[in-house]
Amino acid sequence: MKDALTVIHERASVRVYTSQPITDGDVETLLRAAMAAPTSKNKQPWYFVVVNREAARHTLAAELPYAAMLRDAPLAIIVCGDARVHTGESALSWVMDCAAATENLLLAAHAINLGAVWTGVYPYPDRIQSVQHILQLPEYIIPLNIVAIGHPAKPARPKDKWNPAKVQYVY
Image (cartoon, rainbow, N blue to C red; front, side):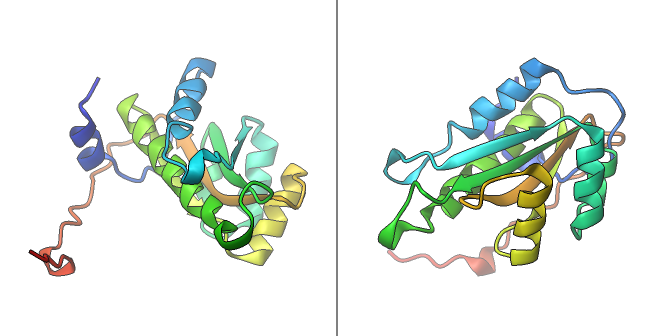
């Protein structure tokens, strides 16, 4: 197993996959990693939809911009938030909680030699409604993003995003 910093720095978006299926054990590993994310007030507003069915992935790919990779991915996980969990001033905390869960999922995929990339659904009303309709989700389950997952068909190179000009130090 790779150490955490290696996984963080090596992870790259993978959009091309082999046809090799993802094991149930790997799916559980990914979901456990996602659910280990920090969460505001430990509310855990996340809700995950695991899409193994090819027809559903193809429909999502056809309906959503930037989701073409779902046609070839053997697996998709839709990271959603349950809007009933956070209320009042913290109503949108589910977005941060689910974003943290998504990052854990992406890092876990790389750690177990899978490739993954996410495409945004929230805050675009048309995308949200499409995903809710296709997956028959209730309106309080709001899709944040879709993560395409598979065995990489070719090596992916991470981008060096370090930019010291985007850092302010206060001593």
